Length: 213
Image 1 (cartoon, one colour):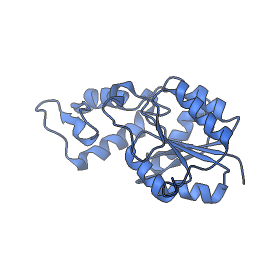
Image 2 (tube, one colour):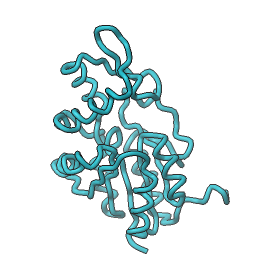
Image 3 (spheres, one colour):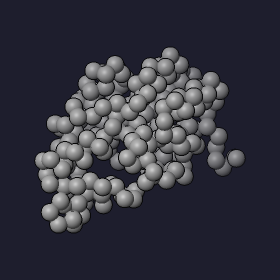
C-alpha cells in the first residue's frame, strides 16, 4: 500500500466561487445569481425581467468565468493552511469539474497560492476518476471532499472504501445545501474539517462497506 490520499474539490472547498461569479455575471451579463434552493441553474435570472436562464445558457457563463475571471477567487478561510497540514500525512489531488480546458489555469491558480498539488479537470460524476486514482495509487486510506451531493453519491457507488466529507465552505450558500446522504460527515469549516480528516488518516483504515454496517 502507498501513502494515504486526499482528493479534494476546489470551488467552495478551497476557493470561493459563487460570490465572485455572482458579481461578474451581474456586472458583465445583466444576470442575478441568487441561490434559493439546491439548484445552481435556477439561481441565475435575468436582471431586467427576473426570468431564469435556460440550462443551455449556464455552462457558457461558467466557462467564461473560468476562462478569464479566476483571479477574482479568494481562498476559503483555513483551506490552504489545512492543505499544508494534510500534506504532512497524505498525498493531495485536486479533482475539479472545470473540465480539461481549464485544468492548467486551475493548477496555476492554486500553485500561486502555495498549493502545488496535481489537478484533474474532470466533467460529470467524480466516481470514475476517484476510482482510477485509487486503482493507480493504492492508498492505505483515501478521503474525498466535495460540496455537491451528486459527487458523493457517485464516489460511494464507484469507490465505497473512500471516506467522504461533504463541505460547503461558502457561507452565502451553506444553509441552502442539505447534508449529502452518501457522505460520512458534513463539516463546513476548515478547523473542524482538518481535525476529522487527520483522525481518518491516523486510523488508516478504509471506510466501512455500507452493506456490512
